[in-house]
Length: 239
Image 1: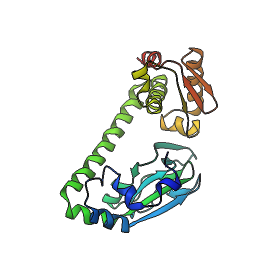
Image 2: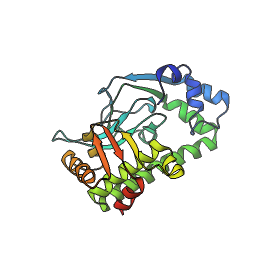
Image 3: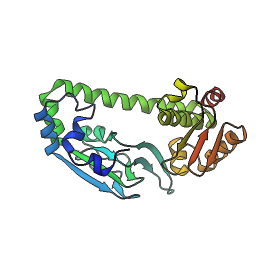
Image 4: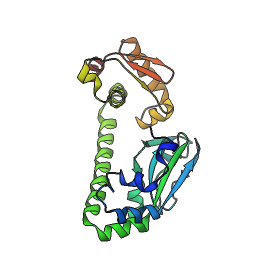
């Protein structure tokens, strides 16, 4: 994960590494950088509330951000959990409408806030930048549709297994498939309550599924450490 010492010295270098900006000319990156500001949040600090007006969009340098809907009952529905080099807020910025969700830090976090005017300037100057921005927004919409489909059609156990497989692959970077080593340990970077909300489950249901998978010998749960004993068996169990 990026650290403050290694990743926050030069905003221009950070921006130049983003897929959205990678093909821009140095002077265009410099223009974006001049209109970008750091925003530091402590764990549990609110970035914006539902109904706030956007003035740009955000990029996570390090830490985690939770996007969620509030409810009158005091509960929340987690829409996404964002980590390093993920951006958010672009759609609300373009629509010039209030944020439909709130954003809260799940850990000490460093963000970059990229001003709306700088983005509009680039859209007017560079058609390829406009295409990349549209592609990024389209991919996000596609992911949202997949989420809705998964949570509507898949069982509670399938949702949890899908979550574990996804994070297991990220942890192994494909090593399990290449080496045949199928046991992988993942560390949950946020609370089980937040994960349950992200999967459209109650915390009690998530705990029950973890317990059932443990009894089946597929995983071992120790606090926030989850060991997947056999990725292939877990994948087959999902089917």
